[in-house]
Length: 205
Figure 1 (cartoon, rainbow, N blue to C red):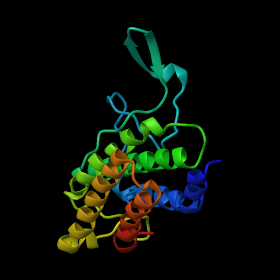
Figure 2 (figure 1 turned 135 degrees about the vertical axis):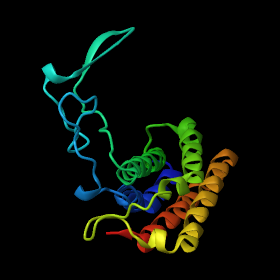
Figure 3 (figure 1 turned 30 degrees about the horizontal axis):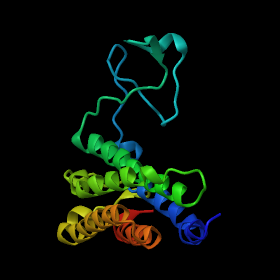
């Protein structure tokens, strides 16, 4: 393993897990925030969790240039409230951020290559970071005792805006660091700091 990868191992091994777990859990909806499954005959499907499957004979048939194929993964439900829909959109967006962060970490922590993809992931973090405020346009706190966004986000919007702006600035800075061939280890460390700080003050654990 190269010296750069060894340094990455010390700096990222635990940190990547912390960010990944925290950023996804920021807005996991509780039962009261989840939309009910549509009635039979509707065009949506209930999904109790991300890896649910339906029986083959109930799979939605999709057609295209590669033939007809049944999709056994339940599709997104129709959300009856803006709160429920935004909570789900926020959760998925946070998961996307985590995925790009972890892809970068995997590149720095292994000899599997992928350096040519670092800029793609960094730019995605930059773009998602610049839009983070849009994930909190509707008040949708997690139910009491469940993991997710705290009501403080909407009670103290000015303070919360400082955190989201800092993350947006840092994600743009990191994308530029990758572009310039700079210090990715410390750059990723700095970006992770803003995630952890925001979670500490605005996420119910």
